[in-house]
Image 1: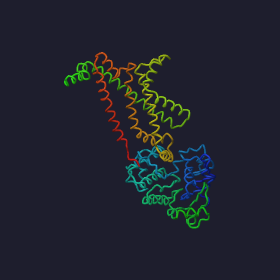
Image 2: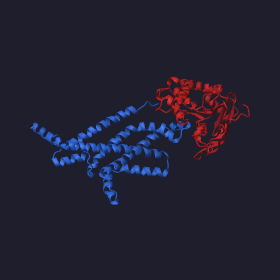
Image 3: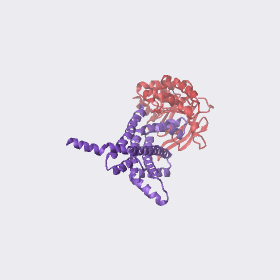
Image 4: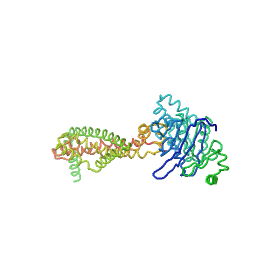
Length: 248
Length: 229
């Protein structure tokens, strides 16, 4: 990592309380351009909440989140304008079931970026092509497999040309044989220089694609480092226990 | 003996002379019923939709008002409301024609039920749909308009159709305040002719009016169904 490159995503002292329970207890994290950062940890560690604070689907209780140098938690920030620069992919795909794959991808192009329909469709087809689904443009989500739906969801985020993409357990809802197709798309994105923050348990993928792995527990970052080190020789006992548990 | 009973039956319910004499009156009633029903359906469902949309903003005092209105109009028998408005309003100096009273009351009753149905539809759309749309930069209203409502309205078609039919049939209540709709024409004709045939004509008119609506509702149900994940 070169110092001096301004980070795409800069999280400082992030805290999130739900009622009296503190889910995030002070997170500091930098994600540099073109970096793929993997977040692992037991359920309830706050991984999803961390991701959801990065585009304010959850309102942080304290701390700041900067995307491309803009503090998205500031009152004066137009959050809708920021969100289009922060792609998000959900565990449950969340495609719009009443729209074709192409319409799923073009909706925000037309309604948020105000692109003319013809241009939106061209960009939408290009995004679908990147995830290998140009031939499914006219299909409805209900007609697609889980893996295809997730790739359409990736295209939907990708079409807006985000600065960073957040993946919230993108393969957890998929049948094992469909996981590979989604990971391949993510690998392609990485190759294309996309900055990504990924919550996932796909360790093999993390090993060969991630630049850095973050281990979280109880709302804190316990340790971080390159995947080889975190998976092979973690320094914290909690990390070791978690990784041993995963390997079983 | 059987022949005699049969001819008495025909004479009572299907008397040709009576049919001929009162056919124009019943037809006039049909027109009035259609007019009121159409006005009630359009204004009632639209008002219900507007109230459900207002409710999504979750402004607590506003939502409390909506809930009070909805519960009141769902709880009260429409006949009570019709009589209350028709005989009550003139006392405070408002004189509405009986047609307007019937339209107003039924539209408000339909709006109350429609609001609950639309609201339930909006609530049944998974949170992930809102989040996905918002994460692409779409605002609250855009998400509501392009993502949530199109799905919610599809879900509401079957219950809304049933409720709409049930409430438009209440146009028959207009007879007690002198709205010249089908039942009013039929009972008037029945008392003039001393024969039940006009009532049977009224019943048939209702069937001719509402059976297509029921069938149309069923068509909508199948047309609006889409393959769910």
